[in-house]
Length: 161
Image: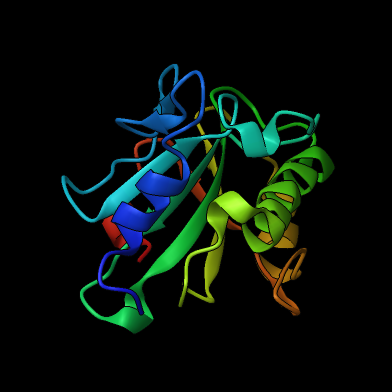
């Protein structure tokens, strides 16, 4: 693991215009509560890596855990209201995972091999949709299929790490 994966990510995204590094992680009333240190949040709507992508997540977050094996990526899609189209959510999360895996601006020597696809919602979501997202491994990253974490807006990242 590099000495400072967060610093490397900041350096790789320093040329984004407008600035894509976000101070937090939120859209409207929906937020992912980040710890005061140990995270870098990339706003995918402003990031050049996602500029040509129609389906993109809201944020990509790198969290540096206390140990190298706890450092991981989070691909975050936020829905302030009801979640009505789970397929679109999966497409957005997949696009984020693919971009982290393939785009030069996310290539960090010794980068974490783990990614957490995360849906945050503020309204309602059908129980069957939650089960499908959590049980079926719908998002692929580095040859592995992963389930989607489904949580309410306002979740603390530390509770997921």
